[in-house]
Image 1 (cartoon, helix red, strand yellow):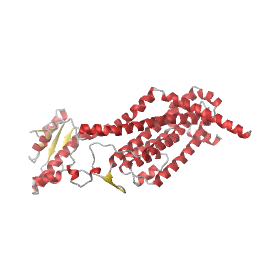
Image 2: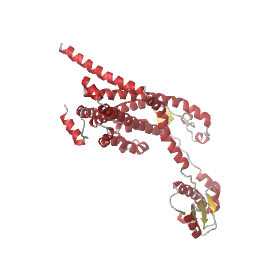
Image 3: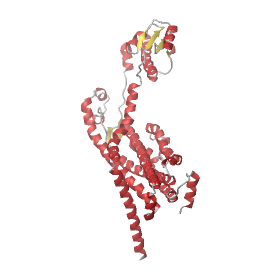
Image 4: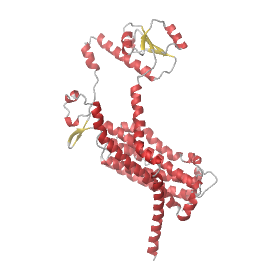
Length: 441
């Protein structure tokens, strides 16, 4: 009889949690916001990460300024102006006259090339201040090329040799494996790892905040009191967390399918537009044809990368959402949660700040140490797994530490939730949360 009673109690408890999970899942999946973010989210995310970099690289040397050139050597002004007549122009005015033109706004800037520039390697741009780095970058690059060529010519170097020296060299990387030589996609996987880490950051932050807002709204509308009459605080919290987790997991799976579809279709389409590149220089390097890069190619994403992405997303989500739920249960309105959620949001932001450095060297001691900190692990370990071959012991240790931290966070959150969900009135402080942890059974 006792066993039957215990079994019946467990079934009732699971039914209550399942009911809450189903309600949370269906309510959010049917919303227009979920549908739009699911199908447009990956496109928007890639756009905000890729487009700024492309624009920056294209506009680094771009300037809308007009620059007058004073050449005290009498040798370089013509070449500088010829490099870009829309920016540089010759002038016969004196320095004082040009300074007056600057002050009255009739001139943007002027460049002074001193007589000893070949030896000193320094010129001066006069402006009213500002103007952007494009002005300096463009002038410096053009002048550097002209002076370098002049120095080599003065040293008796033949023009054909100068052209040969200034010809750029490209680097082609190949990966050596037990199966043989294969193509190496280090750059792609590094960028892809950054995108995956950033996606986990966005998902954990957005869905964790969604859990917190849901708890606050139910508490403010007194709905939680009705729920609490038929289910325990722990059942309510876990039902809400699992329900929203299911929404997030569905969205992630759709994103994976979309990314795989794009990876299959995008390469041939872009290659057909761009055409074939000149592979002569590569062939001269005796690199096997199987390792030669194509104009645009998306390599296969290893299954282990996707598994790591899903696992660390779920682990990170449960870790942070339980804490967000605890904060939501402690306050009466969303404005009151700003101070209390700072210790939660900071561990989310810090890994993103370190992400560029870690992607630059994913095997460095800094990358290893930070990726093993449980609150940073979901983002950084996922990015590292995508970008490099992470040793098995590091992956295993990160999983163990994350699960232990997850258990601890749910334990702490459940204690705060039990008391906070039915507490109204005074805005709680951190000391109140610590006291609730001690009081809750």
